[in-house]
Image 1 (cartoon, one colour):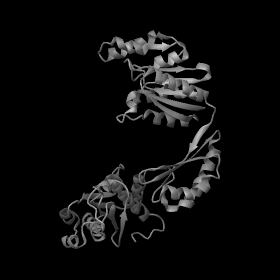
Image 2 (cartoon, rainbow, N blue to C red; image 1 turned 180 degrees about the horizontal axis):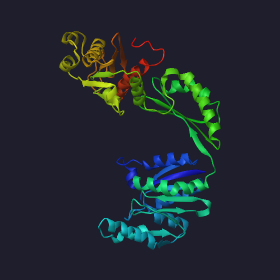
Image 3 (cartoon, rainbow, N blue to C red; image 1 turned 180 degrees about the vertical axis):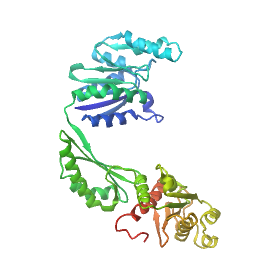
Image 4 (spheres, rainbow, N blue to C red; image 1 turned 135 degrees about the vertical axis):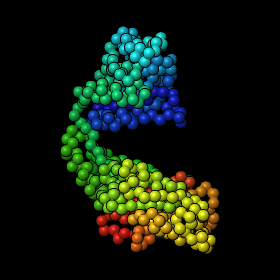
Amino acid sequence: MNAEIIAVGSELLTPDRLDTNSLFLTGRLSMLGIRVSRKTIVGDQPGDIRDAFSEALHRAEVVISTGGLGPTLDDQTREAVSGLLGLALKLDQETLQHIRERFKRMSRAMPEINIRQAMVPEGAEILPNPRGTAPGLWLEPRGRRIILLPGPPNEMEGMFEQEVVRRLARRGAGIRLVKCEIRVTGMGESHLEEIIAPIYSSYPNVETTILAGQGEIQIHPRMWSADAEAARHILDELTAKIEVALGDHIFSSVGETFENVVAKALTANHATIATAESCTGGLVAERLTRVPGSSAYFISGVVCYSNEAKTALADVSPAMIATRGSVSSEVAIAMAEGIRRRSKATLGIGITGIAGPGGGTPEKPVGMVHIAFADENNTRESRFVFPGDRERVRWQASQVALDWVRRYFLPGSCGVN
């Protein structure tokens, strides 16, 4: 089956509110073997809602909407769908009683406006809502399935799990989505595509999507199949070939976050780490500590923006800063070595640079960052000029620093070099 999702609500057409319901529904429908072919966001105007449903019913076997089932006059989903299907709205006494009892449990009188939520299209199956006052509705016009769900995520998710999953599962064709997720860092999307396109193109039954994100690229091969074991075998074969082609640029073949991968490497090797950061403002430390249990490997992090802080917190020589400048390879190295020595950590990271938008010169342009990485024997340092705005420069610098940590523990690594 294929499905379309309609998110109803004028607030979703503003920058103030995100449609997270569609993300939840897409994931759960995929697990049921239902392919989501389109998502639509529509405002609260009845005509727009009606048009969205009319178009979706021409394309999809299942149409699921969220929102527009509340008691106020801008909640128009019930009315729009009933009008489209030529169905009368009738007061359902059992639903009305449920709403009254819910208000009674809260020691409140039910406003008369809530009666609207008990108006049900004739022939519709009511989906109970134990978490709110708006019931969901299930209709099957002309062999299609329309499922109207409330907008609040806690109500919508509970109703979907308790009422919708079993109904859809009974009508399913046994086809399921089998997928995997490969995550890559340290290379551009175009370069990656050149390498792996000949590989995944030789698997015509596999849909492969490449998504470029902040500091990483995600590769999503997936198959719809009634034989999950056979599909998994094919995806494993494809993944193995991509792993050979991309080598250690791959940091996860099971969809793990970059921070989790670095955390596992540090923990497995009983290593500790400390950071001294200037232009990244503590971003590396923040990412290292996103993972629960990070106290096992993270010792300390200092943000030493000023020259005086670099000296006081990371033992950088004032004479070095005066002669080489605060943004220099020498200072980055001194920061990494100083924080490692002070904290007695296994590894130390030092970062200094010009994140922008101002402060650059022809010799030291905006985006120039020096990153150093030290263990007890050696220190590695490199100079980068990252493109983009301030936040992108900071993120790319943090990504390089963490990738050095990851690679430090790879089999065959020679450590810091």
